Image (cartoon, rainbow, N blue to C red):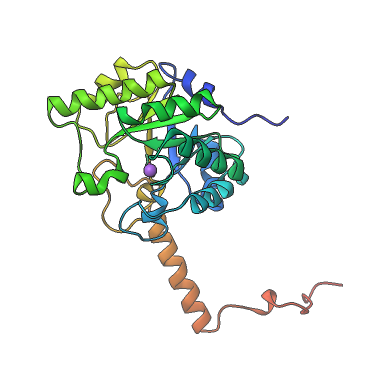
Length: 273
Ligand code: KIV
Ligand code: NA
């Protein structure tokens, strides 16, 4: 019997019951491999930096995000799949956000969308949720604000900033967000927001007290270069394995050890009839 994919209401019900384990995926092979272990997969706009080697997330488009999301949905059957709204696709108005979110969900079959923004974006969250689009809010360090922040900087260091981030999260909860990503915030703010909200908090560089955790998959697999963010941990060196395999392959090709006759068409095996 086909078990159904984890739904948005199921994720919400995990609050206080079990932690939400989430990672990013942009492509079919990663999505296929991650699906079984995870509760949620995010097609993050971090794909701009991770997969396209861009300096920030600002230039990825709705079409690109929808194409990556479609590949992830086609390659999964267990995890709830959420897709990031790219910069410029939702900030103008709730109507613009709805139109682009609906396009992305229609094109991909994803379960919901994520948007970065504080209290000013809460009306947009409400507009989408009231029209059938689940919204994952994202407050704290918001990479799409790189130019107003003047870089990627941890947030909530002062009491004033911490209060503002708590109010941002509460505003999205009141607007109907099903959960909120807390990125790059100083402890104990992550714990404080998690205690204050009825919806799950999903941390990245936030707090062990969050209701769940999300990271960029490449960061935990040794696939994002030598520098690993402070908030990540390398769980495996897949990067090292890929380098070693590519080196072995190249050596075998150059030295005539690959391919062999067994890889050729039209060559009968010695023992075949
Ligand atoms: O784009 C992304 O990957 C994200 C998270 C890791 C939360 O927004
Ligand atoms: Na993102």
